[in-house]
Every structure is written in C-alpha cells, then in structure tokens.
Amino acid sequence: MFTVPREILLYDDAPGAGIDLEEIAEYLKGHLPGISVRGAGGFFSAASVPVDEVAGEFARARVRNTFGLQTKQEPLPGEVEYERRRLLGSSGRIFGIPYDGFKIQRLASSILASAAAAQRTTHNSQLETESSAHIIFTNQLLGSWDADDRRFHLRAAIYGFPSLVSTSGIVEAPAKPRGYYLLRDRLRAMGQSDLGTVAAQKEFEGSFLVHGDKRLTEVAKGYAMQAVFFHMTGDPFCDDPDCRLFNAHWQEELLRSQLSGPEFCERHSRALKVISEAHNSERAD
Amino acid sequence: MDKPLFSAVGEKEVTQALIRGFAKQFEEYVESDVIIVGAGPSGLMAGKELAAAGQKVLIVERNNYLGGGFWIGGYLINKVTLRAPSQEVLDELGVPYEKATEGLYVADGPHACSKLIAAACDAGVKFANMTSFEDVVLREGGVVAGVVMNWTPVARLPREITCVDPIAIESKIVMDGTGHDASVARKLEERGMLKMVGFGAMWVEMSEDLVVEHTGEVHPGLICIGMAVSTVYGLPRMGPTFGAMLLSGKKGAQIALDKLRQTVTV
Image (cartoon, rainbow over all chains, first blue to last red):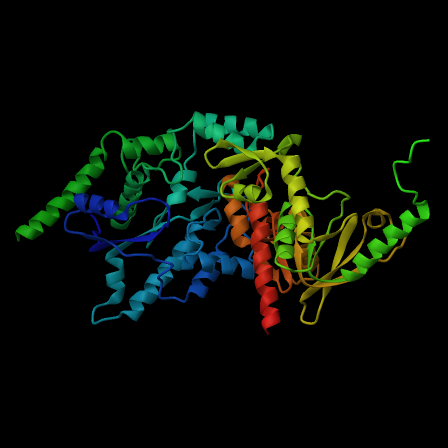
C-alpha cells in the first residue's frame, strides 16, 4: 500500500553545491511516471515568512555542543545577522555550522503550513500539502541527537514532511576510510594540520566524495528516492547494500549503493513497477 | 687618536629623549579612533588597514614582542600556511611564498610576521606593548568606549606585594584581537552584557570561512576579529592556518571604518 504523492517538489537551497536538480527531477520522473516532478526554486530564502524570523530560527537551531544536550540560549545578534546574510544570498555558499536537523525540518514544515493557509482555495489545503512530497536540498550541515551514544551526529538527510537532503552532509556524514583518519591525524600530531588533510585526501582520492564532487548529483538521486519512499511508505531504507535505498554509514557503502551495480533490490524494483503499472492502467481507463 | 664612532651624548640625554618621546606619544593616544587589543595577525592587519585609511589607531599588546602566533606555525615549525585567496595579503606585504598544493600556500613565519608589523608601523599604528588589557570602559547605554590597562609585569604581580592602579584610555571603537581568550568580549560577559558560546570542536576544514563571515560588532562599540570570533560564536576549531586571521582583520577594519564614517556624517 503506497501513498503516492500527486507531485514532488524539489527545492534548491544548496548554492554552489554543484548538484543538478533538473537531472534529479528527470530521474524521478523516469521511475515514477504520472507524478509531476518539478523544481520549485529556493525554499528558506523564498519563504513567505519574514527572513528575520527564518534567520532567528536557524540561529536557534545551531548545535552548540556535540556531546551534550543543548542548553537554551537566545542567539547572539551576530549569529542572526550571519543567517540573514546567508539566506539573502551574500554568504549563501558558506557552510560549516551544524544545525539540529529536526528543528530545521519543523521550521520548514511551519513555512509550508503558512504558505498553504495563505493560498487556501475551495479545496482542503491540508490535503493538498500532504499529497505533495517536498524535498529540500540544502548545503547546510544537519545533525540529530542520538540518545544511545549521547551525542549529535551529522546526517545526509532528514526524512519527513518535508524531507531535507544535505549536500554537505552527503560528503561529511558517511565516514571516510579508516586509513584516511589515521594518516591525517598522524600528520596533524606533527603540526601539519592543513598539509595533513591534503595528504590524506590525496592518498585516498576517489574513495570518498568531496565538496563539489562530480558524482554528487548521481548520489543525490538516491537520497531523493529515499525521501519519496519515505513519503509513500514511511520507510526510506533498505537492508540490501546494493540498493539505492541502503542507509550508508561509510563512504564506501554510499558509493557502492549509489554508483555501481543494479539500482534497486528486487523488492523496491517491484514497488516501482507496481506504481508504474498503476499509472499506465489509469491512463488506459 | 681615532675619532669616536658615536656622538658624545650622555646618559641623561638618552633618558630625557626616551621620556619625552614616550610621554608625547602616550598623551596623544590617550584618546584615539580605534583601540585594538592584541597585536596578533588579525590585530596588526586591522590596525594597518585603519591607519592607512587615516584613522588614529593604538594597539595594546601584553607581550614585549608583537605578532602573536604568526611567527611560527604548528609544532614550532616556523612556516605559516594560508589558504587562497588570503595569499593576496602576502602579495600586498611583499612576502614571498610557495604553493604547497592547489589553493594552499606556505611562507616563512618570521618574514610574513615582520613585514606585517612593519606595514602596520609604516601606516601609522602606534603600540603600547608590555601592556595588559584589564577591563573595558563603558559609556552611557553600555557602549564600549575604551580600555583599562596596566603594565604587564605589574598586572602579573600579586596585589599583596604591589597595588598599582591601572589607567583608562578612550576610543570610538575597540577591537578584540586577543585570540582564543576573547578577553575583551569576556569582560562584557562577566557583566552579563554578552553571552559567548565558547569553542566548537568540529569540522576544522570549514572554519576559516565562518570566522570571516562572523567577523563584526558583537556589542555596541566592540568589534571582534580573528580567533576571538571563534570563541564568541562557538565556531569550529582551527589549526595553525592564518588566512582567516588576516582576512578577518581586514573585514573588521572595514566595518570599523564604516561605523566611524557614519558617526562623522551624523
């Protein structure tokens, strides 16, 4: 049983990340015929909510302590001003601050609800919102709190209504090869901080994604499909390491599941086939 | 008999020259346009830019030497690394450098640091070295309007042995270039006027952009530059790389200039 969305909207809040949203849209259309997939421009930067409010919420969502629960602290004026400049575009390409992904998702959800309320028609606007899958591509780092090891972890995506896919998170969240960290840290211990990072990147070049990597769009397609499956079934993941829906924790796993072998496992291939056949039979009617 | 190498000036003339020169400058700089606390790379850079733009700048430095950590990189290795585009500052200063890899440059620490100090002096910056910052001067409304300072050796002595009061000097703007300590911002925090975030610890490779982007006024009258920005905003830690220090100093100077020009216009 699938809750197939009527349309999928892809938002571009990832300036300079180098992903091609049109290509991702075409990819989704190819696997989900009958569903409208379109680019919808920027999300947070084009929100109907005043930019100062959005900036304030981003500043409040900053992860201040990786290893502890966050204390409530009103953001500094300089932090809000930084977020404002980032949203308005002058610092849009800068990233590096980790945000609580679920707080950002709640912000996005409230923005969608505001927009739906503002555009209320004779139809039930709540239904219209739910029948659309919103996927926001952002270049900002998103994290979530893990109660098991009591620390924040970076995430490549936060699935929900809407879903958020972090282009910087795709690079930073899944771990690089172990050897990379050992080499980098050995050189850093000798005072070669920058050169240590460069040497380690060179040694393991190609075995992990870097920012601006040519492979990012292809990998992002997999995350977009995970977001769609979350919308349809409530479960974005698959246990099969060759399937696009595999929840990769290592870069090696990510590249395997997104760039090589068959696209989907048997179960998810079948699911997409069912959706496609349902659409074809509707057209025939 | 051979002619003496030096002129026949006595010891008392030497002492009088020191005192007169020092007193004249000190009195002149009791009030300035900008006081920068910290003569590290960000403070020197900001001072150079401001003085070159015609502003009266005094840098307060607790050590005898200027330059902060810019003399050496990590692990006492006396090479400094800079990520592009900050090597353009080395071009301005006339410091030679080598390309380590695409986007990363290496220069001699002593050469870069001494040229930056010289550039600040040439631009007209004056220094109060061996002088420790002790507190801020506040105007009505809590606006930072100067600093309280004392000789570093005195500041380090226990009060039981000596009680030498500090003095206050005034300015239109104060800049905190004290590095990790963020000493000036901390004085505001002690008064409950500012809440600092403290150090973040993640993703070293991305921190330089964030330091430059967050550089600015943290409280009326106080601009943070360099590593002090990291401490105030809890930005990720940074290794021994200096590009952000230089560009943060430049940006801080521009922000200060804009504010000073606004004051004049009003």
